[in-house]
Length: 240
Image (tube, rainbow, N blue to C red; front, side, top):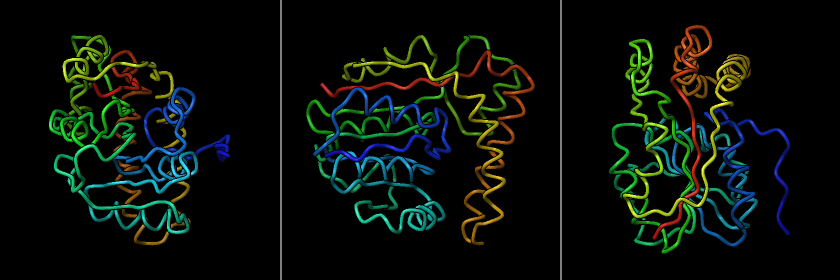
């Protein structure tokens, strides 16, 4: 019997807990082998382990993320965290039923990462991706500065489906989660700052980086009208 997901999840990512709920409602997860890609995804991998009733894996690309992710899920027996390059993983071809990433590949390396994800997905495997998107073609400098400082390279919201279809994915369903961004920037900035007080020193460096990034983006998003230009979409894709 599947374990029910908590009503309030501490997902410190764009889209909050809406993307994982979107996946759970649409796809039967029990018995599926899953891989989650990206830092700050500890809650996601714990929930996937519960839903699949199998070991769930998480990969991150830097040592601080590795140490802190392991600390945060150290009591979870069915989770594995590894340090790995997203573009060149150590996994075999067609190894996973589901690959999940939430805001983790909206950057200039997207093409290579998506190619690798497709390699390690089984035929008809599911790729659940959350993407920061640009909502308009013409972007002011303040928005371009946000993208540059955060190392983001968003797809246009009206072209995101075509991007994945061109890479031989079927778009099973798309969900506009742009409405979550205001809550993401306000709630998570507050929660992250508050949580630092009770963290160990080695954890503080991990969250300090997130706080600084979110603070910069939040000021622009909440006070300078960036919500007209920045959105967040989640897609459930099937490998063809």
